[in-house]
Image (tube, rainbow, N blue to C red; front, side):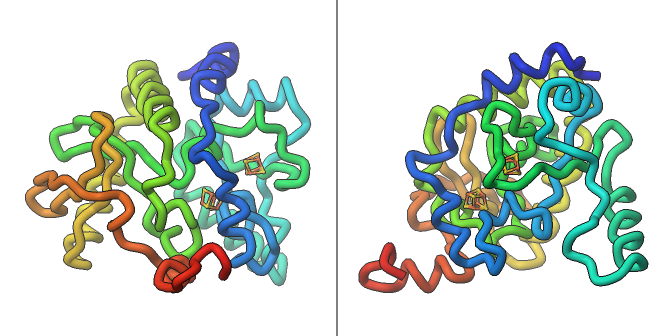
Length: 239
Ligand code: SF4
Ligand code: SF4
């Protein structure tokens, strides 16, 4: 288990902004709540490792345990939502909720905030080769439609952080290997390749069945939802 006193070092080593601009300003206008989607508890519920949660509780009042008190219509719906997400959450993680983007404390963002919208992608032979995105957010997350904005510094810190986490908690590789496998199955079903920010600095499309890598131009990768429409306009930034 990762210990509470190891968290600050991990956080300090994973602090580079994802892009050279505030991507929250790009997606928030498309969210009815006006919040960036990844900071809106109705769209994404953060998790923290047990040791990380202990560290956060001891050092900041930013976070509390998630109880699904928002975004539900009734107590029955709340209980159902709690049961659903708890069943999906590994035993070594807690579901947590922050005070919201207006009260964010950058130094105390959880690892899940820092890694969003990416997860470490593992091949079927267990090699962590780069960053793939959580495809369920492709309609809402602007970064997913604009992978060319992701900085090298962010990518390097992401890779170094997960190299260290996998070194300290090898069992975490199992869960990301399973998620990568799930993504390959989903993309094989869709007949699409998987966009990948490789740890070597390149951008690739991964064949979901044969896992072959093909070089890609980040700004030519698929765009989704409102960002697809915006990109097709002559002055996309003015939408
Ligand atoms: S990572 Fe995606 S969802 Fe989060 S603020 Fe940036 S564009 Fe929005
Ligand atoms: S801690 Fe900050 S970055 Fe993380 S979900 Fe809350 S507002 Fe967003």
